[in-house]
Length: 159
Image 1 (cartoon, rainbow, N blue to C red):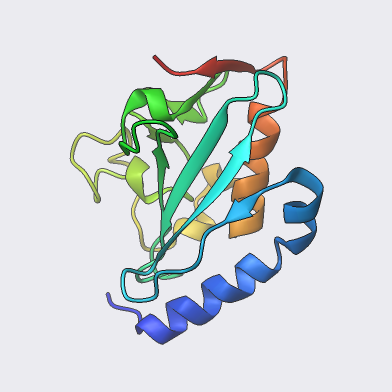
Image 2 (cartoon, rainbow, N blue to C red; image 1 turned 90 degrees about the horizontal axis):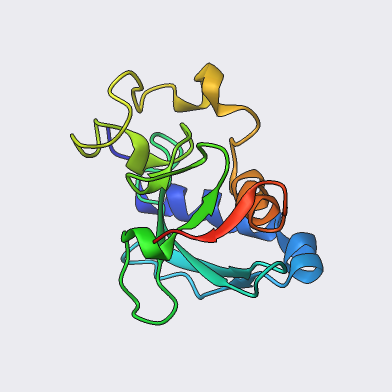
């Protein structure tokens, strides 16, 4: 399973452009795309507590497999640590830590054997009934943004 880098890059550029209105409305900040690493990041803030969240996104082999979504701590620049992640009252932000949805490569044991889901497979990730509407970058970023800005669900940064 290998997607040509130019195809993944073309797809992610298209999906980033679909975020233009949200970028203006919600203040999302996109980094430049590192084409060789197939990576970029998005910064967004919670209006509830002004916490800044940085999501590092790796898109190699995208759409064949889901994006690798990893939070980066805004102060220490460490990635993948619990304190880089938001905490919510639902299971979307999993204590593993990861985004617990088929849209997130990190939630699959196929990616990491300690991940929460051995029952999910990369192949056909977009048809997994658990995915909901999170089948593209805009929907994923909106799900994150709306959770960190919903006082009924958001409870701050994980510790």
